[in-house]
Image 1 (cartoon, rainbow, N blue to C red):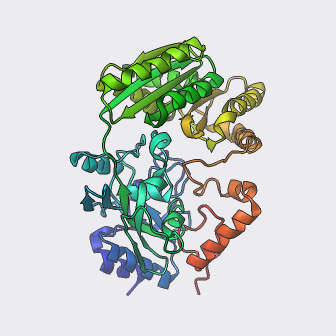
Image 2 (image 1 turned 90 degrees about the vertical axis):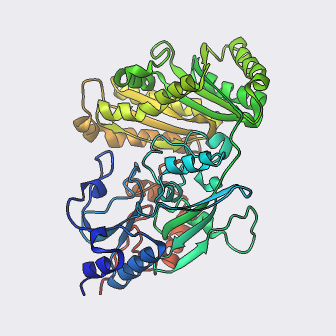
Image 3 (image 1 turned 30 degrees about the vertical axis):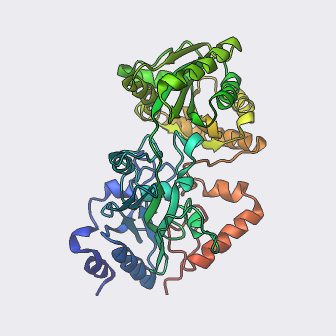
Length: 474
C-alpha cells in the first residue's frame, strides 16, 4: 500500500485531496504559497492519530491548518511537495457545555464565531474576538495564542483555555481536557502547546472558559491630539473604570482614512480631522444607568486635561457595532489598497509614544511619501505597525526595494524599547530569522531542546518558529 493509499484508508478517499489545492496551499493574503503532497481532512481525533502515526512511519512532515487566516505563513506547506497539510475543518463538534462550571469543550476545527454563538445561546460569553472570527478556528487561535480586542479585560487565548487534547508527533493522544482552574500536578503541558504554532503537536480539542455576559456595554469613539494623550487617557480610564474597561483600540489618521476610502458606508468619524483615534469600551454586570455617570465623568476628565479633542458615545448597540466595524475594516482596506508590510509588535505601554516617534522619524526622513497605517490593542501594548506604499503605487516593487530596510527600522526600535517583534500573529515561516537573531540565546537553546525532545524527527510544521532541521528519510 502506498503512503497516499494509507491516508485514504484512514480518513476516506473523499478526504484526501491532491488536486486544486489553492485554498489550502496559499495563505489568505496571497503572500505565501507552497506545494503539498496531499491535504488530509480527518474527522476525529482517532483519525488524526492514525494520520500522524503514518506520517511518522514514512518520515513525512505535517503542517497543521485551521482556518488558514494567519499572517506569518505558519499554516501553508513549503515548496518541496513532500508535506501533508492536515486541515481540521471537519472536526467542528461541540463536545460539552458545563454551564455551572462555565466551560465549553469544542473540537479544534470549530470556527471562533460559532463558539461565540454557542456560548451566547446558553446565556454566556466567550470573549475572544478577532476580525477573522468568521473563518479562523479555535485550534489555530490556541496554536498562535491569539489576542484580539478584549485582551485588556479577559486576556489572550492562553488565559481562556483550561484544557487541551493534543496528538503528539508519534501519534499518541494527550487527554488534558480538564475544566479545572487549579491543578498543580506537574508541568503545565497546556501552556507548552498553546502558542507553539503546530510545531510540537496537533491540538484537536480544547476546554474553554466562559463568562456571564455583561448587563451593559458602553462604547465611545474618541479623537486625541497625539499618541501620548492616548496613553494618558488609557491610564485615566483604567483608574476610573477599573476592571470594567474592556477594550482600548488606537488607530492613526491614515488607517482610519483608508477604511473610510474603501468602506465609505461605515462613515468613520473625523477621519482626517485628528491624528489619532481610540475606540474605548466599558462593559459591566451593572445596568447602564448605574455605570454611565462614571463613564461620562471619565470623558469629562479627559477633556479637562486636554487628552480628548472630540468624542462620540454610541447611543445604541447598532451604533457601537458601526464604530467597531471601522476598526475591523482597516486590514481589509489595506488589502484593497495594495501590497503592504505588516509588523505585529509589542512594547511597554509607557514607551509607545517613544517608539512611534522614533520609527516615524526614521521612515519619513528616508521615504517621505510612505503611508503609516497604524492601529493596535494599545491597552496591552500590542501595535500593528503596518506600512503602505505611496498613494498610486501598488507596492510590490516598492517593498522589494525598501521592505527589508523598513522592517529593520521597526524591529530595531522595538528592541530599543524593550519590546517583542511578534506580539500575537506568531513567528511562522516569516519571522524565523528574526527569532534566531533577536531572541535571548538561552531561551533559543531551551526552545530547540524542547522541540528535539517532543519532535525528534522534526516532522511537525518544520521551518516554522525554529529553523528547519534536515530529516533523515532513510
